[in-house]
Amino acid sequence: GMDSVRIAVSLAPDDGHILDIAGVTSIISNDPRFAAETSDPERHRVGAGRFGANNIWGLSQLMLGNYTDVIAAFSTASETGAPVSAPSLIFLAVAHDHLGNKAEASQIAAELNATWPDFPVTAIVRRIFSNSPGFASDILERLAKHGYPRA
Image 1 (cartoon, rainbow, N blue to C red):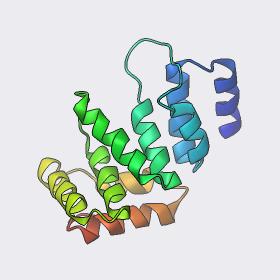
Image 2 (image 1 turned 90 degrees about the vertical axis):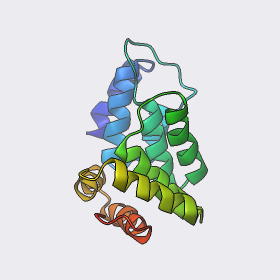
Image 3 (image 1 turned 90 degrees about the horizontal axis):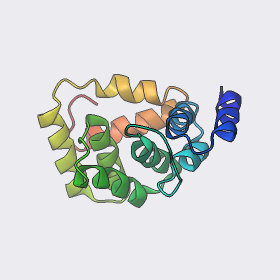
Image 4 (image 1 turned 60 degrees about the horizontal axis):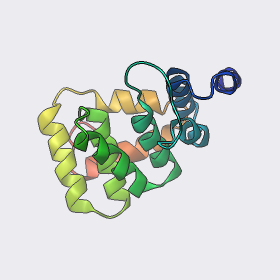
């Protein structure tokens, strides 16, 4: 649980892999503040390979209601050549909807539909937010509002 995650982070506060695991666990455990702390883009990280901190950061900001930061996190990923994923498009569309950017949200929902027609959006969103079902429902309702047919 979260106690073990906090201990791991206290023992290895700059290990990028530990921080990623802590961030993902925090998202699933509905603890977006700790997810934000462990995935902060300014935080020093060591370790080989690529880290998921940017995606974890974006998701933590969505949960905390910081929609401009969500857009920055997921837009930066594509600009730096990181692969654009179906989840990143989901969270971008939802953040734009929260900010009232209806055209952007609809365009992203259409891109999601065209690029990943078989992506199991509902199952993935409900699994990620299994400890916050109201949040999952809100995401799916916002996608559906913008014409995404499988939300």
